[in-house]
Length: 284
Length: 277
Image 1 (cartoon, rainbow over the protein chains, first blue to last red):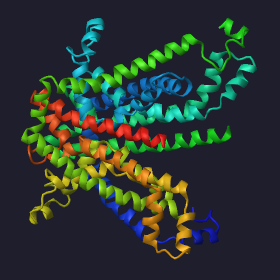
Image 2 (cartoon, helix red, strand yellow):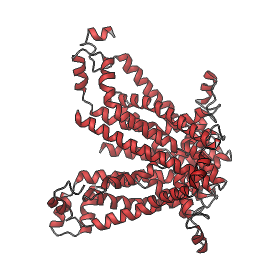
Image 3 (cartoon, chains in turn red, cyan):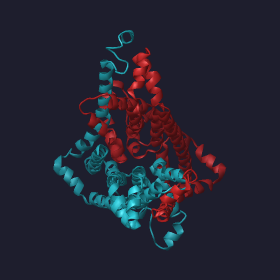
């Protein structure tokens, strides 16, 4: 960083006071609130040794929770990529009354506290609920207390991610590309698949990964609709909570440490995808 | 498709056919109504099941009142703490160049990647009865876990990045020419900060504070781990929603939840106003 800036410019910037104070405070606060607690988690988890770690992770209940969390989060992220891209497309390309309102309510799942989302979704998807009743009558599917209910909750909480990552890229995408494709004889469908979708791919993948990461860690909106049955509807964050309630601190710590590693890997993936998206933007 | 290809003028390839437009529009609006707005209406519908008096009664119960007070107290500590941090971090990052800056920015965003349950757990491991500082705290008779300080710490953790991530790009975009001009005209550092930087960044600060506050008042998972759910003592509004719901007091649960829903709507309103500015 420092080397890339000419020395006289760097020195000029240092004319502003408060560098030591602001950076010092930032580092101390960051360490106290975030870094030391997270390091404590890893130290505690590594304290039990490889054998104990493996024994806890490979227990049937933990494996079932991981399998459920990963699969339901994956499907929720997948559905959100499709719906989110369609919504971003509609918001950017079409003009219709109520567009501003639609744009504003996309963020509603981010603004609504997870516990409120949890009880509201449970109420509407219950067998006697506004949506759960008709759906059960039509398809016979029970939504609450099943993985399907968890899936619906995760689609809800992760919904804004894909819209908000794809929307700006789509807005920046010049219609001239599509005109060029059309003038060269491409059909609308060919233009969409060969020109538009490749341009949106980095943003859509970023949105997918963000939704997936959020879904893996989600607790509040799921806990009410899932029914919390071990081996059946118990997601990983809920399992950590159950272990804590029984004072199984070692088990809770090991599971949480593994989840944190997964989150960090996803974070690196998201950073990589964003850099790829930026490169694509510059190349165009 | 054949028609599209043979008459490119009436169906230019940059415009979707009206059937596609109508279909996508109906899909998007229908989904938004069923999936996003129905839960919103459900909260208020359930809250007013026993009429307006039932709604007010539910909110006036002592347990609800103490939950509201605790939530205000926790947000009142967590939001200013993260505001000061956000201002310090954005000043350091936007106004100066130093090695490791990108790493620092990533670390500031880190709490967003941590599951709320894990966020609560780390503080139990540090300050719980069997945690690192457990023996020390019990010797001094200080209670952090299953008490208000733990709730504050967990809330600060989950809302940590909000103000900083709004302010860093804003201050970076504004540059430091005006600050340098103020300094060269004889202002000292704090004068420059109070009179130049702060007024320029006020909308960004307001927006960051409102987002931070919405999350601080609504946080459930992390607070749930450290609170111990002691009624009247360590129940915040979201935790009280859970308690009432599990007691089958649906009107009470949704009435208290409606307060947080109104806060969410207010936050959305500010956001759409801020993006239009």
